Image (cartoon, one colour):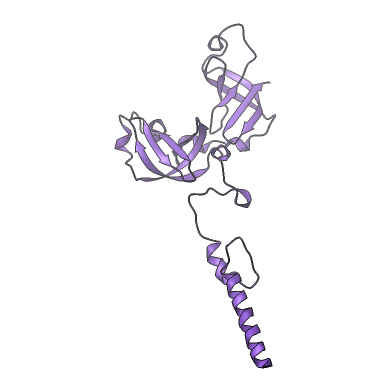
Length: 210
């Protein structure tokens, strides 16, 4: 009788151990590393995991980060890419560095897999460029320190902003106080400016006058 009880108890313990080993990945039972080892390394491309498994937002992608995208649509001026995790990217033909391009279809086809890097995020879409794009040889926004003093050069203006080249992967933004005249009259293309970094995000740099 005792031997039967011992046998039943041993059988029950074995069953419990096996059940633990095949439990969901969120459980972590000691002694089951061989069963869980493979599942911990499964690649799930539909999820862009951040810290502690959190889903990554496109706004968190820093300029210069390398991604792999699949072409899902080609237009005259570029290609729309599927970057995974529900993120869409756009690669403009001006980033190809091949002179004047008449149509993007000469370079891309639906289904192509491209190695690209992040330029920025605009209107819910990630702007990307080929991994060897010339701008990526410059400093990333994260390399600049708040308050860092720089010599810049005006490369353009809009109604409210001045665009300044400071040796970064992206063009810095200067927001002057409301001027009495148009910014294009106050800031000429090629004009040298002494500026300092006032704000930065993963994909944007703002400067102010020294």
